[in-house]
Length: 395
Ligand code: SF4
Image 1 (cartoon, rainbow, N blue to C red):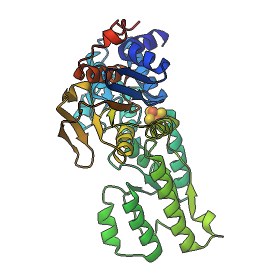
Image 2 (image 1 turned 30 degrees about the vertical axis):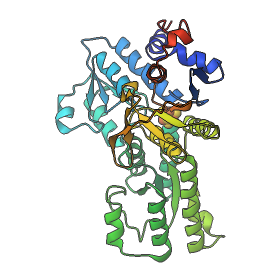
Image 3 (image 1 turned 120 degrees about the horizontal axis):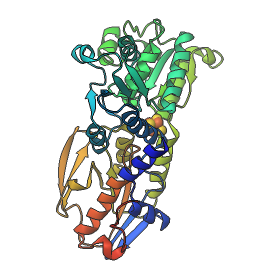
Image 4 (image 1 turned 60 degrees about the horizontal axis):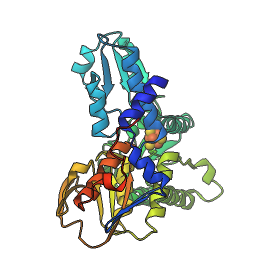
């Protein structure tokens, strides 16, 4: 593992980022100042998942076949690197054809967000060798929802129903054959749920609204009597707290304060790394900034929440790599509300600017370095003149 860790570090580290960090997180040249958030980039769970994927390739050299369920993490560059090692991607929930092509002794890597119970079972039945990189923080959520199910408490999960992690978590809620779950995405859905808890409503309309976000056989008239709230590990902390507050209030109104313990449970399952990155950005946003760059994969949940925090306060550009800064007149960036990239023109005005930078837990430092370099390049400043040996290859 030590050899592999060194290799991973050499692929993804950035001596420039380390030096800016050592310099208090700022870098200034001409009329441009860059400020980095105190915490950003790779989290412990992502580092471990990548290390294990590299180790798997080394431990099982060709001709052993290695497959990966979906993506190791939500970052296109990192996934490309894993593919370049000869690891073949399968769907996160492999198709029947993909399963049929797998043989005993094939190696299958389970990504950091985990996999669904049924998928794991099928791979075990095939006799595949599983390299499980599921993050410990994700497994803590699983433990919680399994406990809810055991006690006939319906899991209300604040998360994105389509996200791999939430799919894996909901499969844990139903693994015992009797448990139920409902996934709420935002406060609007939470309010709708609370209104149903308090006043009832049209069962069919409710089920249509949560069609792909509740357990098979879920009945809102039966399965909302005792609920336990948990969350996808990478949600926005403030929103998750508000979701649980509103559901708690509804259950208290419905059943009375004294009986609340029998009808409502809550465990905060936001992971430490997500929390640290959100807190660090919150602090950065207290400082004077003209614009914010958020670097990371567009399908990364924790990164999209960082962008959401920024856009409430100042012009925020969510980019997956430095190439998206085409010129000082044009940037292509992800609009998560519309689910597509859009263009903004004249995004980097000539006047003195302070640019904040952060990145999600799945973004390696070398991509952050690329973004910093590009920013200064657009200002006509070569970083070599600023940090004379910044261009040296990583050690
Ligand atoms: S974001 Fe949190 S839950 Fe996800 S891999 Fe990182 S530490 Fe684990």
